[in-house]
Amino acid sequence: MSRGQLRPSAIIFLISLGFWLVFSGQLDALHVGAGVFSAALVAVLARDLAGIGSRLDARGRRVAVFTFSVHWGRFAVYLVWLLGQVIVANLQVALIVLHPRLPISPTVVRFRTHLPGDLGRTTFGNSITLTPGTITLDVEDDQFVVHALTRAGAEQMLTRAMELQVARALGSA
Image 1 (cartoon, rainbow, N blue to C red):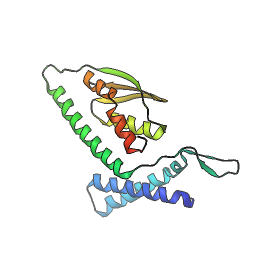
Image 2: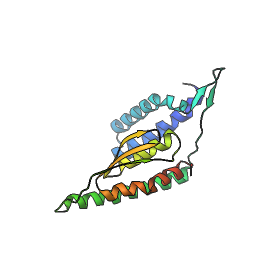
Image 3: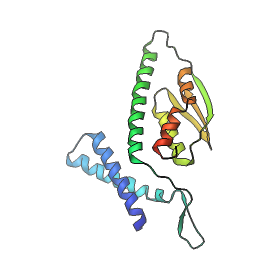
Image 4: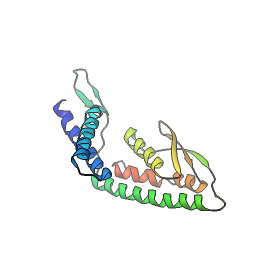
């Protein structure tokens, strides 16, 4: 592993281990050991991700093709906002499922995003899918196809509120 890959790998290891410890809720030697092993495996398998967004020049040196900067404060605000959206959507889906008439109106919408690059589009697509009642069916270039449980959920996608939040979090708005 080169020195340039060490820092991203360490960050991936620490984040993965942190998630493991928080979500397992167990701090005994077996669970912590399994978490360290799993986080190390993820860090090793993901070490080539540091090369994403770069290419080799004629001399074999890595040159950035695009750059992005994540403002961690804005990204934290985005995560809190997304958690709020997930909670609200969970309640909406629960009300629909518990309603005697099951008022669903499945709708598929197709729209273009203004988010640049794979990172923004991947974050956006995953955010849609994490929100109950919606799922990203397809992404091709800047075009998204999203299924929503209700017409209102589909119309919410067209307001671009989530897209704007992702753009802010990733520093492209």
